[in-house]
Length: 277
Image 1 (tube, rainbow, N blue to C red):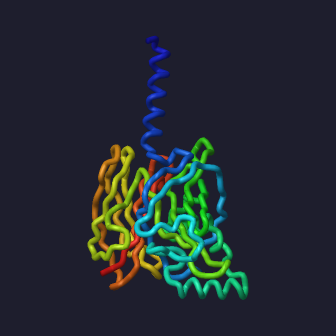
Image 2 (image 1 turned 120 degrees about the vertical axis):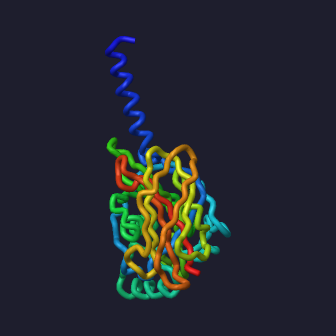
Image 3 (image 1 turned 45 degrees about the vertical axis):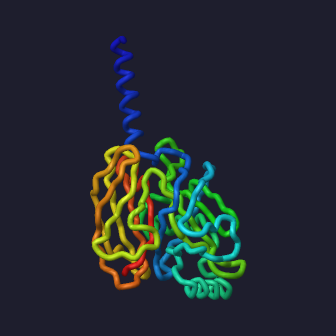
């Protein structure tokens, strides 16, 4: 091998390592996985109304805990947990009355804009500003969210599961979970009752990852628990940790885990929903 070829080979190897360190964030496609879960806030007025850009991407195959709602058009949650932007049927009804009388917050009728509101508004992942994929069947939607990578291609950081909830043609979309791929959040179990400190865990594929866990309580704007800087990485490698939180008995919690730092602060995330014992 000549000296020039050796230099070129070294540069190519370095580029490959840099891309591998970003996990799935540099990919334009979405991933196949199972739902981890979700939770939410107490008021739709707390949501933001982002502009949902969209781009073509591959279809997402998913499974959910409990009964499947794929393709249903009945306005039911089918045993799943609504986490954003409404967490009770009363909140849905209240918004519908306001929408019918004055056109309030029409973005609730758009699954893409609802998914972006949850990601960038509720969770605070400001760089997540792009709808990267959309698969809608009846009242069931899988929405990929992310951002554009340095090559100007869409990078999916999560696929959110949404359902339409309520009655009438104007029933809104609500987030009920995430379809986990290279980063999963399997503990605590979706829908479980929990206490503090909360044990968290799942599986990750990536290089030199640093996990950040946030806990949100319904009706409370800021996180009620947080744990950052948990090292992780490898090929389908288990990760685990714990986070303390403060929330009243019966509170609905959203637990979110994210990793990033190679290209963006958030390059993968997953969520689950639990209640305080």
